[in-house]
Image 1 (cartoon, rainbow, N blue to C red):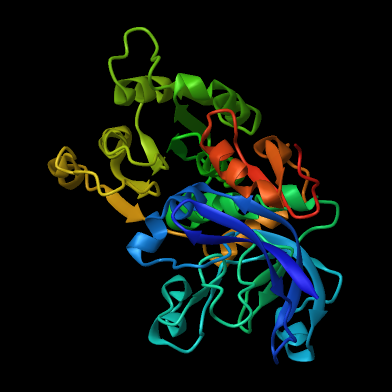
Image 2: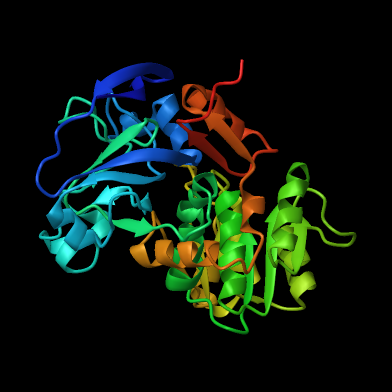
Length: 369
């Protein structure tokens, strides 16, 4: 048996190939991919940025947010993972070794021997290590989560951005009932943070974005945000974002989650918005931008707790899938586009456009000419 796969051969170079589906080793399983989500890092990977940083290498099958059906699984993996053949599951991208000092201390995301789906080259083993393919081989120690019944695969891929929302806003941000939470940025993960804040019982939730992202801000309102602000079209009398947000809240925020990419000014805004002793979570990578404009004195004088976040812990994924299966919110509003496997490049570029919120790749989808 062979599997179609989109293989990245170099910066900007994607090619559809057929790779052999191997005989499984002990502890492995075979996943028939039904959908894989696309996120901003897929654009960075396509452009060559991740290879330049040493995070990925070529040739590689990208795609690190897969959802699929278990079609073959050994007894040991079945026992450890608690899943059966035929079950639809979401797959975490990082496979930890479970024995290094970081794994044993709970820092599995930083495992010294980690294996990552979507970033491991095809020259290793079967090569079927990415979600932009028909099949994915699951290695021992993989972390999989059953998808609730009735949730379509393309919507289930929201487990990753929603997981980030819960992980960053609740687990790391510490949001509790009654808090005022401000989310800077209304991309898929910014919207997910707003959802998580509301689910945690935040009393007031504010989401910011650009005027061209008005449709995303409207989705935020439908998913529970109390206030949405266009940072390039502020209310009359508000000269900056800090003034506008504090006016909307009639005071300071308890937690500020910065999801904006490349914008250093948002860090200064977050410090200005948060209350003394409050928490600022920095989630958006700044692309190596100069941080000299950040007011370090304000951090000290307000005793602000700044927390960086990367990736997602298993707890966040579990919370996300529980919410997806609950029908408590119209989460499907977050999913905007679906593309065929051969159209991965178009899907990645689509996510960069302002009208796309979340894009899934479906191997079974017929390509549209």
